[in-house]
Image 1 (tube, one colour):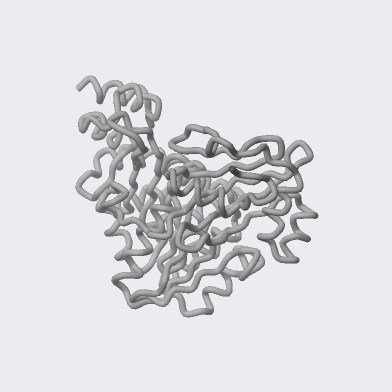
Image 2 (cartoon, helix red, strand yellow):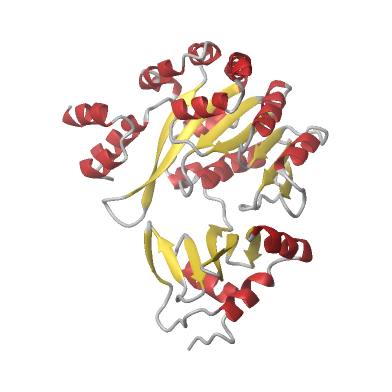
Length: 359
């Protein structure tokens, strides 16, 4: 029997991890809830309705004095911590209707390989670059961090290099293998992405992971790093290669756009856009990827700001490991993993996908 007096956040997270839930949701006035395969359900029978005193005790104990001050001022807080032997946790704490609340993302301690995740082999090839920029894109909850963790683990396993990550918060922990790994968490190890990224260039890096491209300053420093002998990985909240290029270029003022296009054409190595799609052949979800590889032809199109050409180049670029989202979906339909209806709900270009499925 669970009681408010003895209930801890760690207990709730352990239960969520046990049932393979992706997220735990706790708020005042509700029983704890979980999200699994996009479905929200109560965590377990017999759980009490959470009150303010209980959730305050749970969440404030996770914060240091500085974080408590920031939370008091901003009413939001991102936290990362480990439940020993169980999982890592990315926790967003906030207020709603006058009461505290949180959503905890459950992150496995073990990093899965690209094969275990069912991701295309070309992603492993991207880890062999010595310089440049690789962007993994997609909406929140599309598995970008998991994909990047698998790619970084390949580097960590195979390359004697200096690997630096800057994250908010830190999710997957990479113990040093062949690589020397340094992981910095915004709010704990550094004040923000920008100073940490600038400092990283003076820390003899070979590979840099930036948790998210949030502004022009971060993008500019990332491009500089890619141009000056480093391999940079990062994420953008966009759903396709075209949308990613459009978003990145439009971050900058009009008089800089042509120059940024040229720099992106020289530095970009790939864009991997990802969606997680419910399987129809059993429980779980499958990752569908749109992949743009920067061949000389692709790089020239980017340099010339001809972003509308990228879709055609991906369509015809299978030899290089490229594919459109529609091509990925058609393969899953043919393999019996998803149905045509599921594919249509996640189509890149709906009219084109209809034609591909008819064939």
